[in-house]
Image (cartoon, rainbow, N blue to C red; front, top):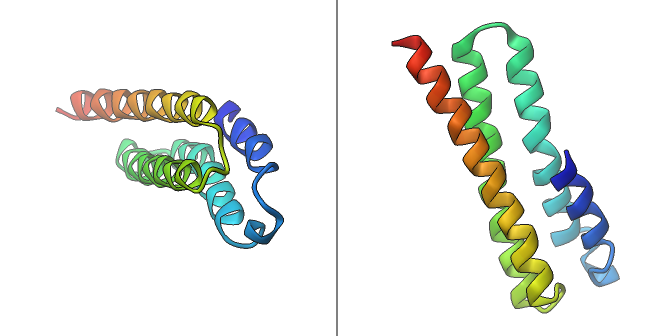
Length: 107
């Protein structure tokens, strides 16, 4: 959720004409990460949880790509982009760890 808050506040500085394009898309993707994790956990089965973790991870990769695009368009300073992308990579590692844990429990 901290990543979502960071991306939201960072994307406030994107140009106004991007409000309904890249800004909206990156915000939807970043919010879907914790939302999918929560929904999957609430489903009650490890199989469902794993499916939603995969969706959350896909959204994290989407956010990473959108941040790279924003940086290429110079909507973000290079240092800010690197810092946030590093946070996305950490989220991806955590999700991968949860997926591995569920896979090991299932065996």
